[in-house]
Image (cartoon, rainbow, N blue to C red; front, side, top):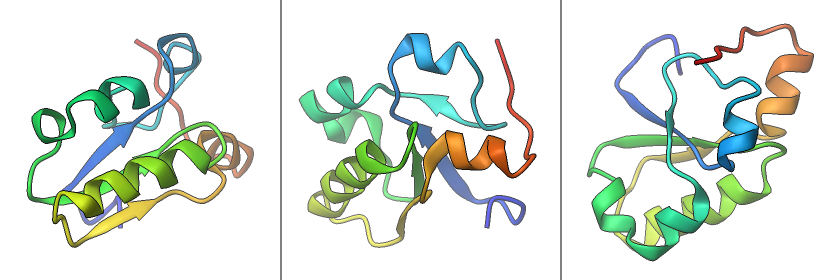
Length: 92
């Protein structure tokens, strides 16, 4: 799905976690900030959420669903699982 493009990839981890490495093309919106004002951080497009292990991204997905977004995904196992499978991480 990520390779086909057209998704907004949103990393909801904390800044210190983001700094250790994130999925290529992700943008950083900590979950707390997303929860405070979800409409200002999410578009009506297709969204994939990721966090460290997959729990916070499920919360973010539920918030997006509440806004009426219909194509929402959460990466199971999060960044930890992604990296353990040998997929690349970026660092700013």
